[in-house]
Length: 125
Image 1 (tube, rainbow, N blue to C red):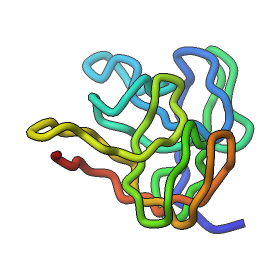
Image 2: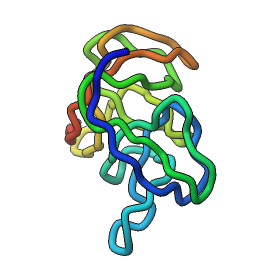
Image 3: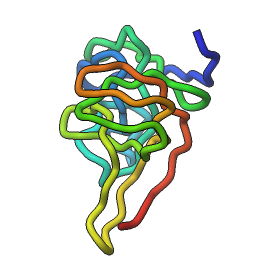
C-alpha cells in the first residue's frame, strides 16, 4: 500500500470504492458524494471500501491514490471525473476549464484501477 493523506467524511449518498468525490453541498457542510464531472472542485478519491448513505467515507487527499477508470488514459494524463465519478483524461475544449484530481502514474483502460498522483487543480483547453 502506498501511504496517502486520508480524511473521513460523511457520505451524502452511497459511494463506491476508488471513485472521485466532491462536496455534496459546499455551502452547507462537509458531506461528500460521487463526482458527476469536472465542473466543480474535486475533494479526493474514496478508499476501496466506499461508504453507504450516511456512513463515513475515507477520502484520499494526497499522495498516490487508486482510481477506477472510466476510459483509456496514458501515464502523465491529467485526470478528472466522468458522470460516474470514474477517472478519465481531462481534455477541456478551447477556452473551457476543468477540475482535476491529479495525473495518471500509469496507463490504463476502462474499469482498471490505477495509481494517480494527487495534485488537485484546474486546466484550461
